[in-house]
Image (cartoon, rainbow, N blue to C red; front, side):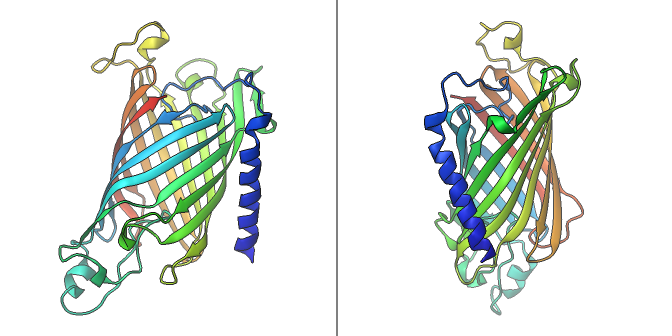
Length: 324
């Protein structure tokens, strides 16, 4: 009953989101545009594909190429889509797989703490080499930036914004081992605020805290229940000005100079209410604005004192952002 109530709350919120565009005028102003494409307050359409490598505590390895983007319905309502278009999960180094693959039945461990991950399926579903490839589960998020949750400080120079969000993870994987076989709903709130400094570099920084509660709406009977808090907390610090900041007419690519550099550490706390387990992951993103609307980045990540099979040990991501 609790999950059903939350589902109806999500549906009502989503309905309000979908009805919003007709009531928003073209004169709505954006928060000052972020050159890196990372500020959740900037509702501009972007295309942001990336490659991601992940190694788990139990030696499961995951490689994926993900199509990711943001579509702005208007200046205050938008959605993201995130689809692992090509994904490989390699169980060949897992001790249980080595021991049991030819002698006895066994159960696959999970591949991670996020929704839409595999686990709980028999080893017999794997190919003889311990690998499985295909497409993963689709994630979509709907964001709303209402004026009622915006405020300014420092004489209007700085901004604090609350952004309600509803996320859904859809079981679109082409193989049971590549997805969760679970429809997951994740209502949440994003809190974004500028640092209270006027001068660079701290005067250009912001903090964004995304907070979700994940729960299952529908799942295969063999899959575990989902009840989880998931945080994504960012601190972005620009290090050098993009070249176009001083010359708006400059459309050239700045690849080998020191312009447009930034760093953005991310912290992800995850608490699983079903398993009573906490995990923590940290990843600093190093990025460069090549020109206005074109960004590249690299992002290594590490699990912090994690010891469960499904916890992340090491990750690496490289990606590209393009403003549309």
